[in-house]
Amino acid sequence: MSGEVAYIAYHFHWPHEEIMGMEHHERRRWVDEIARINERVNQGCAG
Image 1 (cartoon, rainbow, N blue to C red):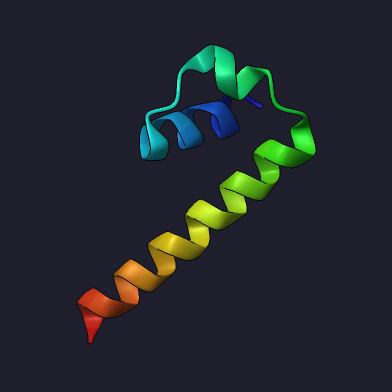
Image 2 (image 1 turned 90 degrees about the horizontal axis):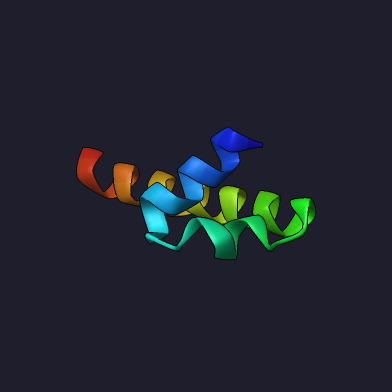
């Protein structure tokens, strides 16, 4: 769980309290979305 919180906070700069107030499935959804964003950015840089 702390990895999820750090990952979201690093990328979106949301406060710890806000992230911890989310249900686990909601945090997982944001982690997945960040991963998709990073993939698109990395593909754009490689092209």
